[in-house]
Image (cartoon, rainbow, N blue to C red; front, side, top):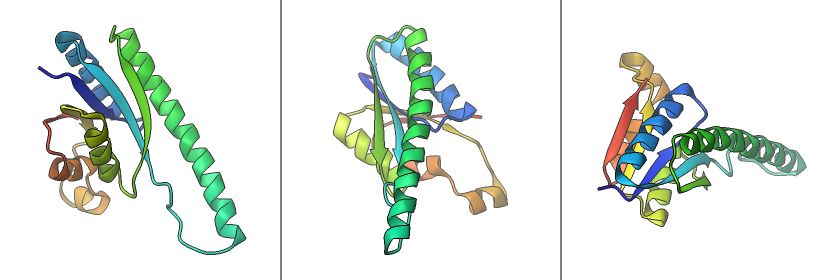
Length: 146
């Protein structure tokens, strides 16, 4: 039913629950899995040498964080017996932009992602990446609640 599952990860327990669910689905359907970590390549605005130094430090730290999260997710998927697993560090000024671009570029037919399940004022203040992904992605999305 699903040939290619995209799983956005951020290293949180919630995203690892989504990884486990995606691995189980991949076992049932014989699906490939792509694990995605999205970073904002240009989070700063400014001019001059101080800007460039801060940018370089940020990108080094962001890529290290992405590698850690993706390695843990890949290990979990591999341990579950999924044969084909890819990892991608995507770019986007927002996570939902990175997810949308990756869905389109890899041809994913399912997105499995975690949600912290925030409600009320907490959701308004913190926003919801999952809600934004639901608004832009045109393939089925399985939301795994925390």
